[in-house]
Amino acid sequence: MVGLTGHIAGTVLPGGVAPGPLSTRGFSCCYGPTGILTVGATALNTPAWDIPNLARLWAEAAVRGENRSLPTVPGVRGYPTRVDETTFDLKLFITGDCDELGDPFTDPWIGLEANIDTLWTNVFAPVTTGRGTRTAALTMPDGTVRTAQVQVGPIQLAADVEDPSFVEASFSLAVVSGRFV
Image (cartoon, rainbow, N blue to C red; front, side, top):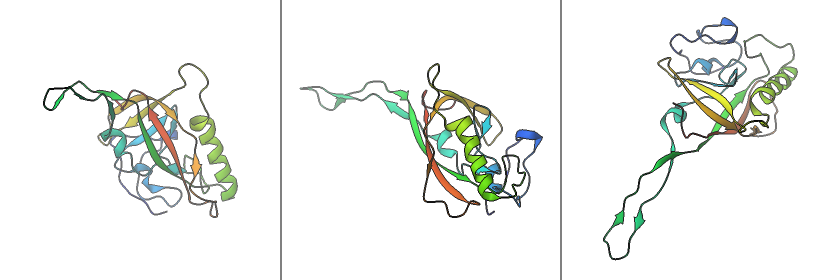
């Protein structure tokens, strides 16, 4: 697979796998320079599935509040703003060639089914308890970890799947506190 190379300082993926050079199976960009997102205990940057760019998660936040126009006063009166829930639309690439540890499947269609089932069970299935959120961790390029409570929208495939080795999907990620801290 073609992808970005790089690593995140001190990162060890599930199974004790450390980031390395370009992989011959799965997504090599899972060790990219913009971070690793983990929802619950499931990393979303692995050889089996990958979010290609996480920079928006550490750079953007929605704010609420607005200034008000007052009659007979020039301009507006400024009021404080606050960080608000921020929703991101993210791309997700999935392969049926291997599992999240990079172990190959003998049939990529069965592998794709298994990978989508794993993602559904651990990330995309609605949370029906508590406040309906999951804990997410964003490992930054420098190795520090930021956390947030998130709600993950349903996965949507970009088109009909013709090649189980490379499937493009998208989903929404709502950071209820507005940003990872």
